[in-house]
Amino acid sequence: MVLEECVVHDVRLSSVGPGRATRSEVFHSPGGLDLAMKLHYLRVVYFFASEAAQDLTIMKIKEAMFTLLNHYFITCGRFRRSDSGRPLIKCNDCGVRFIEAKCSKTLDEWLAMKDWPLYKLLVSHQVIGPELSFSPPVLLQVTKFKCGGISLGLSWAHVLGDPLSASEFINSWGLILKNMGLQQLFNIPRSIPTPRQPGPEKDPVSAKRVDPVGDHWIPANNKKMDTFSFHLTSSQLNYLQAQIWGPSLDQTPLFESLCAMIWRCMARVRSGSEPKTVTVCRTDPYKRSNDIIGNNQVICKVEVESECSIVDTDLTILASMLVDQGVDERKQIEEAIEKDQGVSDFFVYGVNLTFLDLEDTNVYDLQLKGHTPKFVYYTLQGVGDEGIVLVYPWPKGSIENGVDGKFVTMIIPEDEMVKLKSELKIIGLLLEDN
Image (cartoon, rainbow, N blue to C red; front, top):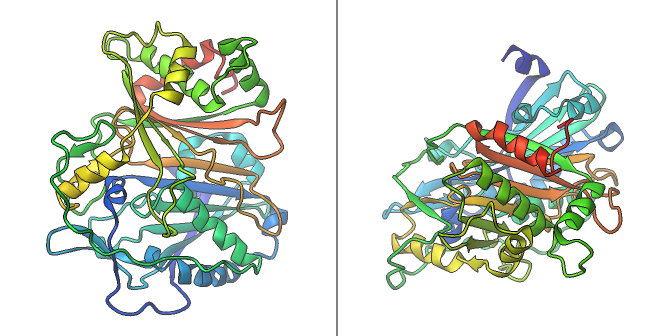
């Protein structure tokens, strides 16, 4: 703890709201898919070198936020409950929580540490509740490093929208900072949906109902969770694809091949209780509503027969299943939520072993003075005991033989971590220096 307090210090808090006032008594009702994600939080840290951050003052950052929040005024609201108990956002311009901090290390020193748990110092881990009216759904932390570089830590309540929504939010701020006007964006608050016919008798496989959490929106874990991250180079990925598929041109995309390898490693770790069902989440580029925020990502279950052994199944078969046999459960999840008028509590990440594909979320599109981030780090809070694997691009410029590098963040039970690392090293996913 002493080390952490020394590394990041001089923390200051304030709030930033929209530049123009929202009319009174405006409420936004999150949809069924939004409420299914309300116990999850996305944490993203963008690292910029000193040349990108030069002359970027706190005032300039806040001025661009004023304009951005004119479009994203819903993110400045605070949660309330309707008479039925359904969560609503009152668009009262309370603002985004703004955090300023300083770091005693240089940017390069920080990145060289690869101390992933320490990244929590660069982005807020505040959750919604236990007092809804005082809990901002969005927090932004600006940390200045000793060398002049900075990090921008975005804390995003998943109930607002999926990873693409969060990415478009911060990327739009970058455009405003460059004096590039935003196109007219739709941000019309949604009303409470009309009650539907009774939902499914059984809850969907990809979402789990939990005991009521009240106004403190975080799921209870039965196991202590741990986070680990590692970089996969282009050379590694090309080699691993060749190991699975040989000279065949009929290969699955790299994400599915990678997930198949991790799936089988987890089956070895959980011998006797192999994960026979996994969840795959990714951006749906074909289904974007007129809203600029919202949860529209694909949520697919992939199941194998109960008598099937994951450890003994060929990787080509597992990878092909992840591509071809996923069943999108978004409709069933939404129906299950609306069946109880949005009052029941569910979670999605970690119900089953979950794979989250962030390839199409424009991870490196945020620019400061024409510079893209030196590195972007993603993690999640509120993950269930089965764990999650996040896969996203390595910085541009690492492409080799048509394949770019990837970065992987894994959140799994702490008591499985040592054995999993060993399995990853055996198959070549994890190098000794990781």
